[in-house]
Image 1 (cartoon, rainbow, N blue to C red):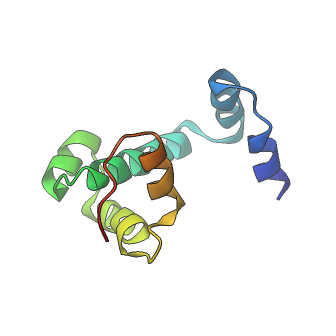
Image 2 (tube, rainbow, N blue to C red):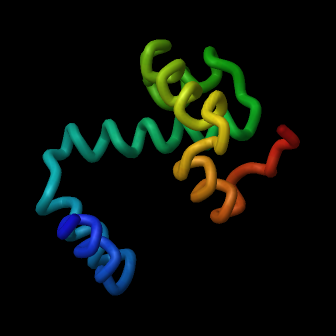
Length: 93
């Protein structure tokens, strides 16, 4: 788990951006950012077509993210982070 420990040791947003720029290809970063955006929009109750238009994500990607954040028993860690950031209202289960 050294990678995750390294992430926890980043000091600020700038270091985080630089670290991930070093670690990932531009395509990998875009994919992760896209999935995060999809999760945020799903938690804001936006429909697939709106999400597709805003993010360019495929319906398969949107479905996969939905399964990970909405259909899991606990909603997944990404859902928790989005809620912590105040980017979506907490839904009643």
